[in-house]
Amino acid sequence: MKHFKGTSEKRHHLAVLGNAPMFDITVPITSPTIPPVENIMRSYKKIFKSGMLTNFKYVEAFEESVKNYTGAKYAVATNSCMNGMMLILKILGLKGEIIMPSFTFHATAHAAAWNGLELVFVDCDPETYNIDPVKVEAAITKKTSAILGVHLFGNPADIESLEKIAKKHGLKLIFDAAHGFGTIYHGKKIGSFGNAESFSLSPTKLLTSGEGGMVTTNDADLAKKLRTGRNYGDPGNYDSEFSGFNARMSELHAALGIESIKALEKNVVRRNKMVELYKKFLSKIPGISFQKIESGNRSSYKDFSIYIDESAFGLSRDHVCEALGKENIITKKYFYPPVHVQKAFQFYPKRDTGLKITCMVSENSLSLPLFSHIPEKTIKKICNAVLALHEHADEVKKSLSKNFM
Image (cartoon, rainbow, N blue to C red; front, side, top):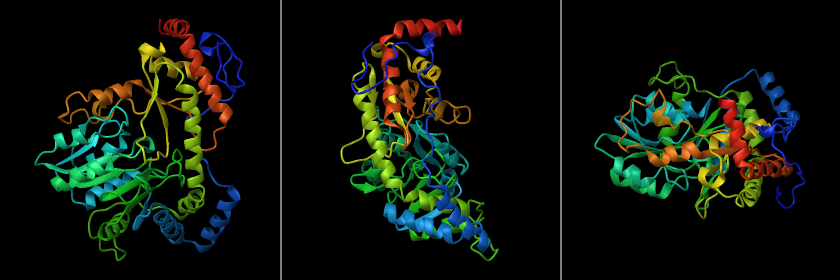
């Protein structure tokens, strides 16, 4: 079996064929790159001494740092991306239909469903995997009130086209930017597009506060209402202006976020470098292709996903997932099944019949391990494992078939 130039891995056998796993210790799909604990503890001591544990000075400082990074006029911290999205949709007063992709994490749809909106799923672009603007415009009716785009895996959506459509039809435009910290669209960082963007700060993201979210917007009135909404709709006088809920961020989470954002740009650059290393080796293997990043854009690469053409590679995506698992390499089938066929959402009408591209991408894509501090040698070994699966595809398929019998 040949090996990629520059790798030291000499193993000719696969765990799926009865040999020892390539990795003795499991390689996770992701791992948070967090700042030194002593940096955090200094802040925690100050927070504990103050007695103010939530929504105070550290939250304000974190919001300010996000504004400075993204270029947005306003940043409002929340306790999750989904809760931020739920508040955005409620405050905008949306009714009727909202158009969104099905190839996304189901939280995108949950936020709209909790607001009583009728979800209209449309197909994605076969190369970028993002929502297809042509499909969006074709799905608009008199009942449509908004478009909800997603920067999938950190690859920015076609913002310009979506903005033109929204303006033409008088629609609100919101972005699920859960994967978006570090993403660049046409030379500008994500955060100030559409009516608002909602980011995730969970442990799987490049910028993490442990748990939490951040909404960015250039709309002063929306920002003010978001701050009220995250506090039960209470502006501070116990006289609720509207029905909100508890979406506040704690000072402890904000302190971690403040330290994390200091290394964000460095981490984004390194992730892109590691993706280029993956592509350098994997592009040589038949049947493997990658999500397209348009010229002038930068993906944060919250995830690195490969598309597997079974006829050319020799194995299906599911085969590869299972076989890599036996090498102690954790992979994920993001996003499978797509949202429109999940139990919670399959009753919504499917105007874009079949969503063929969405299903095709969902059934054939596989996310490989990627985190900001992943060693280069780990990526090279993973690539050699994928190459070995291709070169021994028939044997691997037979071995896996026996397990199903």
